[in-house]
Amino acid sequence: MEDSYKVRLEVFEGPMELLLHLIDKKKIDIYDIPIAELTGQYLAYLDKMTSYNIEVTSEFLVMAATLLQIKAKMMMPKTKEDDEEEEDPRAELVRRIIEYRRYKEVTAELSDMIVAQEKYCARPPAKLPEEKLPPNNLSVELLVEAFSTILKVKEEIAIPEVLVTREEFRIEDKMKDVLRLLQSAGGEILFSDVFNLASRSELIIIFLAVLELIRNNEVIVRQKQNFSEIYIFSKEGTAFEGNLGDT
Image 1 (cartoon, rainbow, N blue to C red):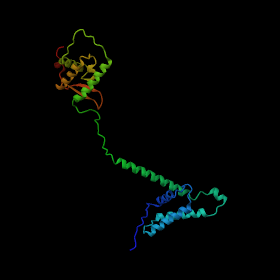
Image 2: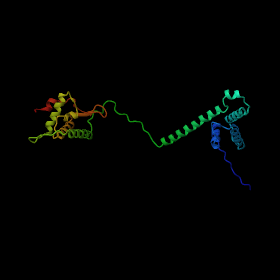
Image 3: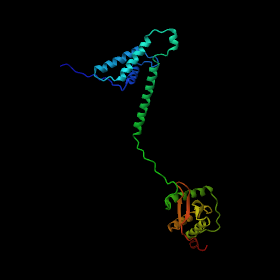
Image 4: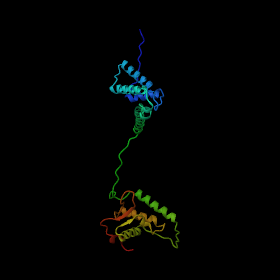
């Protein structure tokens, strides 16, 4: 029994891909193509395609005719005037091959980018509030963070405190002070402004007073827009006169 074997013939998508394969395989100078050699190799490959029952499409035949035409022009005797005026018959073919090579390089690079991008999963950006946050008080954590910033600023200023007698502060008194400040400011003040005139020993008491006012639903603490300054607002319907009392 005779040994059978299969010959696998590489299939190309089009004639330009086949030409580029032959040029790279034989290391041909693309700017000085030996057209007779390249035409012979191209036609030999078409013969193999036919012998292995591979359909030779019309575009391969058109390229074969183009190569034979260029080969014929190259073999024709030329005068000195022809050399000066006529363009190299291979010039258009060279331009097409160079353009196709660039196309192949870009395609390969884009394919690599697609493979790399497939490893990631993107999600649409979350829509942030455009104007105001919900009408609830800010979280205690955010207020503590803002208060910590104020403490750091006070420490950096390092204003010395001269105390003749020990000062005692009450949360109830500071609550009244905050409400009075709100009233004089038209019902809206910056959170940081509450601590402007306070000594370092008062800061914590004032902060606790603000928290107590929030708990009693007498003030609202919020931001006018995301990541902006924190404001204290008087609660709508709050009777300041009744809350302030006597000093």
